Image 1 (cartoon, rainbow, N blue to C red):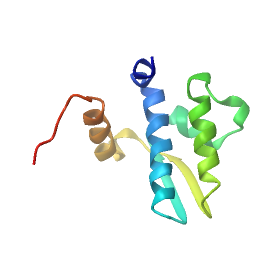
Image 2 (image 1 turned 45 degrees about the vertical axis):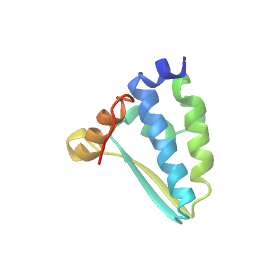
Image 3 (image 1 turned 120 degrees about the vertical axis):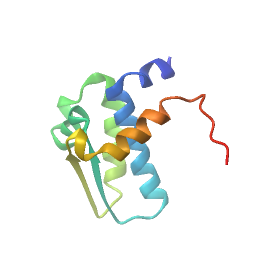
Length: 102
């Protein structure tokens, strides 16, 4: 069931934002700037909490809770063509069966 939800692009993007905040907290960052080409996610995190799309509501609330741990945290929408590296990594990450051998 969870895997099916992650196949929904908006849920996958919301999960990536939450994970980035988890990593930043674990690394003891004081300030973070989250950039994403997922406008729905960025709008949800930047606007009133009542307007969360239901599919990402729990992830968005968890992300906002994590964001409050930083002295500064911003959520910024960027066009996909300005976010090519993250897009390529997300595309590869969507294939869980892919193994990298060094």
